[in-house]
Length: 203
Ligand code: FES
Image (tube, rainbow, N blue to C red; front, side):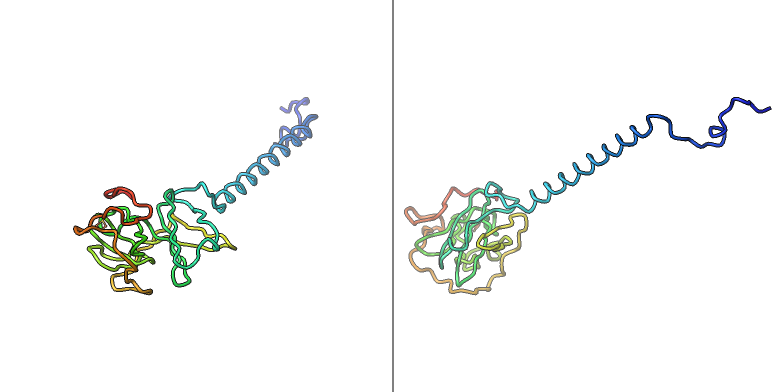
């Protein structure tokens, strides 16, 4: 028996708009728009954050290493928070990881010899970080370096192995006295730049 009062649409599964549905739909549309706008802003901010080099960024990120004009021929600049040096030699910039590829001591630059000299076991590298002498297996490791306009940016998230022993693209002779003592350790008053106590295996 059919119920004379039954709603024919309900019986067929059709749901018609009720008074108030239009308001609810508008509210849902508005909510989705707000959510989508939020996602776009969030995504844009994340991209900006990833791409934007920050002077405050430290090791593991992209570090602002100053302007190209800061690097005249022979310049060596040390960036302790990024744990690297940027050197300018023979018209090219190189970003060198401070950690010795032998056993990981921090390698200072010796102003008097014009070379990097490791105070732990006496490995020596030219100003471009290429191997000169000592027990190190290769030249100093380096980071990706990029020049953007006048800005020098160093990506400390990407480390490349230093060149093999025997690779020498510039003259490696010492320009003066070494900072290493007789035993291969650091001599006093040798003019080491950024000379700090060896850090053992820390980077
Ligand atoms: S750690 Fe530098 S020479 Fe050994």
